[in-house]
Image 1 (cartoon, rainbow, N blue to C red):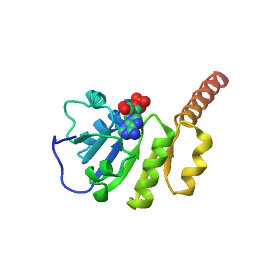
Image 2 (cartoon, rainbow, N blue to C red):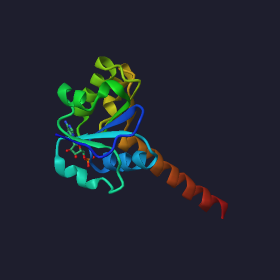
Image 3 (cartoon, helix red, strand yellow):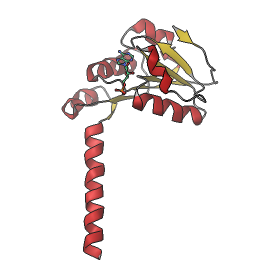
Image 4 (spheres, protein in one colour):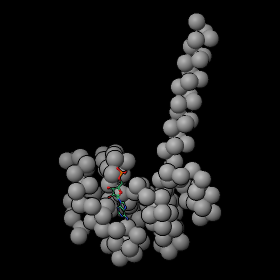
Length: 150
Ligand code: AMP
């Protein structure tokens, strides 16, 4: 089921997974006037989108090629897979890169040890555990510097 809200001109960005991260990203990119198609297998997930969201929502399992075709993946400039399942994100990212030759593909990865799989396929990864570790380390360093200074 595809629900048309508003389609802006030019290539679009596909976001897979309308959870906390996907919805936030979709709202932000839509506010920046980017053309967005967001896919989620659960129609209730779209309630996280802001009323101002101006893209297309598509209910379906993004590991199915028919769903990606419905999202007009062949015209996409980027595919970002941020479901809560690493295997799904790997599969969607590989399909986008290998089958549809999408230039920019980003995938969320919970398990940092699987990053090598993505690197092999030239897929950018966002790993919450690694990002959080870096940020906490930075906070600890900043706090230590303040203590040392005064
Ligand atoms: P969150 O854990 O809050 O980031 O949410 C992840 C989202 O990904 C949920 O809304 C799920 O319904 C969605 N999701 C999980 N697997 C798939 C899939 N195969 N295709 C589309 N959406 C999915």
